[in-house]
Image 1: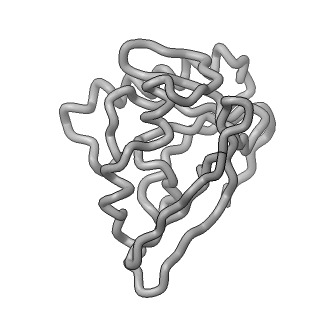
Image 2: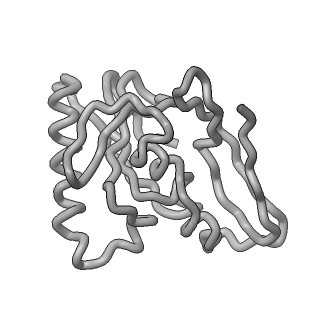
Length: 161
């Protein structure tokens, strides 16, 4: 199955999750997309409002290696791991990006962090782990559905990028 990335003039974003299907599972590749004359500080409305790969995982149309789920969220292994253990925790109710979170999301955001802790314990990350939320184009956000990266399984260096 071919992946298609549509780029509109005036958009700028990083896409770490260009997706192809292999055996029913996701495979992603890194790519940076930039169009001249674009505004780096804005997120394309299309990216904010279109269904994401995470929406498709949530509705079951794309398979993922799910390690935890509850009524509020889902945790699964990243298909392009940046560490020996690289998992993503996502809310079932889409929040496009952290800066779009409202005061009413406080309980959900706290729950997501406790799920990160639970998944880290489940994955035996007893020597430590890193928790990352990328926000917006300059923050490296590539999927506009809030997600928390849980990375571990080796000594992680700083700065990361």
